[in-house]
Image (cartoon, rainbow, N blue to C red; front, top):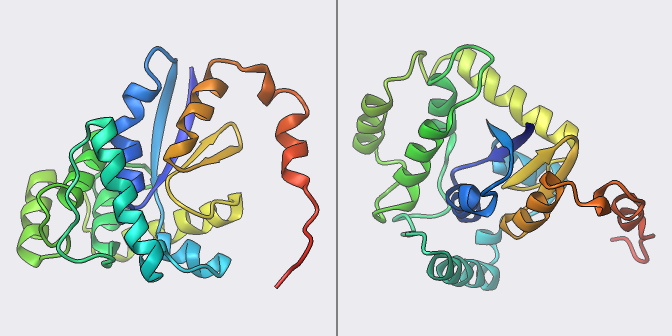
Length: 212
């Protein structure tokens, strides 16, 4: 059985859709998933990028695209009342639901994802966050220094591994980014020889022409 490390931030609609679609996309494959929270804004800052919601035409396309994916995949999605929002409280809550050094299970991540992406409410509303914490009953204090340090550590590790966006799937050191990469992930799990040949490495070394 192979392990998939699923790097996620609940702020990303593509991460939500990929999370919901994962069991169907990988049906029949032998795998286990470890869910690791990462602050998407931190990735953007490190790599010098803007988020798709920060560029008006790209924002419009992004939400049209996720509406289409929701339609074609049969996955319910509702844009939260405000987006982007600060996801720190939700990411920290995910870690507070497990022991020190651990990672949240699928139930916890599902609950957080659906809190954000179903119903169209404010994801960071204080009353909703309190109700969410009551539902999940975290083992540790989500606002404690220990949890804050763990989230920083996971985010730093993600950067060190070359993660630049979410969702990212890490399969044996190979990073596959985005919901569009799920067919690649499935092929790799099934032992497609392409991943063991020269193509994986050679495709990544196209020389840059212009740098700015």
